[in-house]
Image (cartoon, rainbow, N blue to C red; front, side):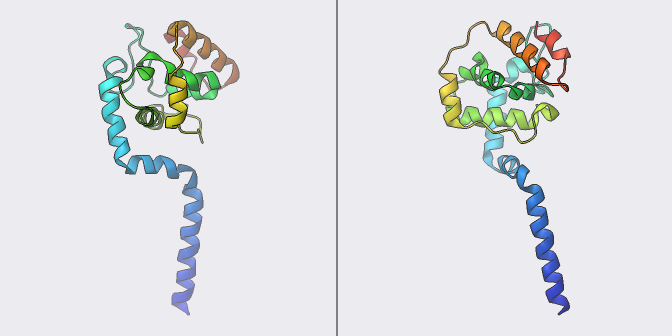
Length: 165
């Protein structure tokens, strides 16, 4: 009888843990797959040259920071599109699925708390549709998006506005 009661408690504990961990399941699965390593390599090859290894960017070179910041773009639909359409993303010589994986990796690792909780990960299909639309005047668009994000969010990093101009 004692064994049976402990077995029930263990099942209850496992069930409770699985419910609590469910929102993070897809994020943890990304880290447990070779996709995370592939994304890290793609970052090194196609992003790190300008945004630096830690995503800090360069104010002097007018390269925006990604670290603890880039997730703010997901707060508005146009910002989500921007992350795919910005020339560094759109022109990366990798397929749509791999670019989606790279963007999701950046949002899970570099963006920190700026990524909204429960954000919808990019898919290859979404990336394929968005990256086909060319983007012009990147700096002006980024400034406009940051202004819009700033108006819709109270916890936005306002230093980003100064850095993007």
